[in-house]
Length: 120
Image 1 (cartoon, rainbow, N blue to C red):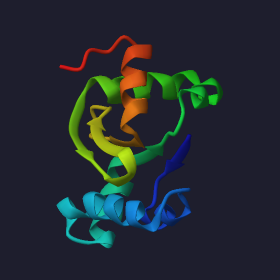
Image 2 (cartoon, one colour; image 1 turned 180 degrees about the horizontal axis):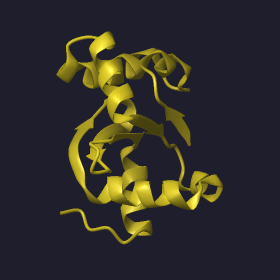
Image 3 (cartoon, rainbow, N blue to C red; image 1 turned 60 degrees about the vertical axis):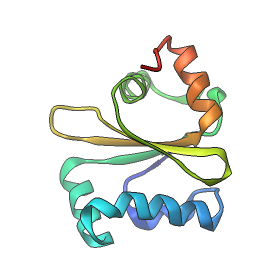
Image 4 (tube, one colour; image 1 turned 90 degrees about the horizontal axis):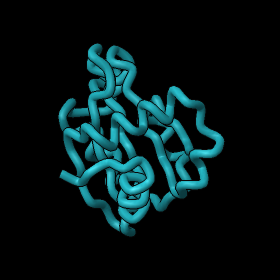
């Protein structure tokens, strides 16, 4: 699992440039530009988590597992991307902290089953 806390780090994700551009567009849309987005992310301590396999959970600390479960359970927004990927946003703390999850759609389904989360 890769955690991203700055927009400039998006280019380090092991994905295609097209997918990185789609993600950046979705992340910056509500804030008009990168600077506004980064300011909001800093204030609210937002993160983007990139997951590719359920096996990655073996190396994840318990607190992050709980945040992941919360993010999968209380999704505010989800969008399908190219290459079978999806991105979602969940507000995971009362402070307004946003957690974006970027992963293959098939993994999202697998995680819902793994954690016994319904797809309502």
